[in-house]
Image 1: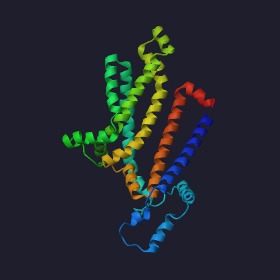
Image 2 (image 1 turned 135 degrees about the vertical axis):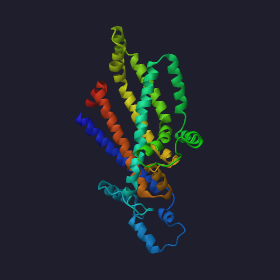
Image 3 (image 1 turned 90 degrees about the horizontal axis):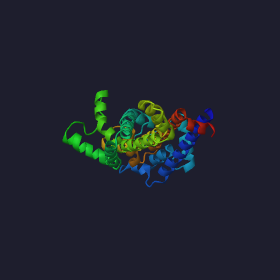
Length: 315
């Protein structure tokens, strides 16, 4: 078990290094000079431009810049923003709460509503199950930005039930501001979770141990709890984790659509300004979050499913 955790941690570190290299390379190869974007139409002396290029290592080779940036990150220094002239962490830290609240509420919605309705769809009669399956087909096909537009038009502008943009102040107001963004963020992925949960539970219900338990006359609740739901936890946990990682990407679109002051909105602004340090730091944080989520899911699967545990130990 310890060996399994160590191997997964090493794989996560390698993933972080490879991802940071790819992000760094993408920014390095992208067209446009960040100094030119920073200066704009202003008149700046050659000495100032040379000082800025030296400060941000813009004239150094690619690998020198990447290794230098990586070394500073390992000491907790994400560098300084090229366009905002402030430490990158000072820009990111106050926005983490908004993005964390959005993703946290989205995860709760996925588990409670998505998995819950998936269980209902699997245990209900054919008519109800088919209706829910049809509705989820529509939900899966709706992109986050389309859902955001529709929700703003109907519930914010039309009915005036929710604010159109902003993160709000105070816990109650912030939760009120997050309702529409969370629905837009989880509509498609939640529908997908319902479908996978339904399919996983129905597949487990057809297996021999369950049919044997039914033949022995065990109570339905016991069969569902110990033989169906428990064995279906592995695919359900996997799809919830995949959904959460996709929500990390989707949150960037949602924060832009609802003008939420999170790191997604900061990222889009930094990309437009070619603010290397900010883009690299946010991408690294998001990738690290995904790696940690994947590791947690792997551990959950090992703990709840003896088949996965045997495979992991024998790895």
